[in-house]
Amino acid sequence: MIDLYTFPTPNGWKVSIMLEEIGLPYTTHVVHIGKDEQFAPDFLKISPNNKIPAIVDQDGPNGSPISVFETGAILMYLARKTDSDLLPTDPRKFTAVAEWLMFQMGSIGPMFGQMGHFVRFAKEDVPYGKKRYTDESRRILGVMNTRLAVQEYLAGAYSIADIASYGWIKSAEMMFDGLDDWEHVDRWYKAVGVRPAVQKGITVPTLEA
Image (cartoon, rainbow, N blue to C red; front, side):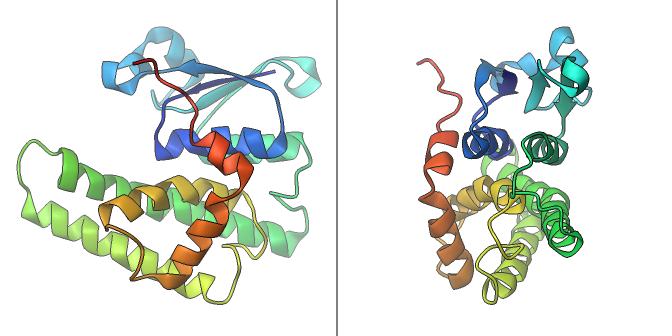
């Protein structure tokens, strides 16, 4: 059994989608970041960076519990635990998945997150911040668009790189009122979005009214 500590954000959805894709049973624990619950001492023991999501695998290596934080590490851990094709073992295929997973973690997530902050949540208007991160987010979407013009998915076959990226592209679709400027990203986004595991994963966790 996996204990998933999460909140409905692009980062949180990565792990719930992954758990649905590989079919591992899990229990969801809501860490309400709007109430600063991520800073609770008990959560810090699981996630040293005070960020969601994090997991505890009660049946970890050698049958002992293990906690894992950082979404890329969680996705890789779960894929290896289940020998999933979502992280292939072939060196060339593995490298392609690793490249695009790191692209999400180093570019998509940070830049889209900053764009969202300055455009939607900043308490004061910062034109430089808005332009800087919106322009960079558009550039990143262009990189993806070029890749997806020649590949069905980011690493060729559907993988944890796509799972990691989907929630952030969902946020970009809302920010830009659609993905019409990036037709190949739009095609990919729709293809990933109809997967049953994705449709279920983005409903996790369900927050009480």
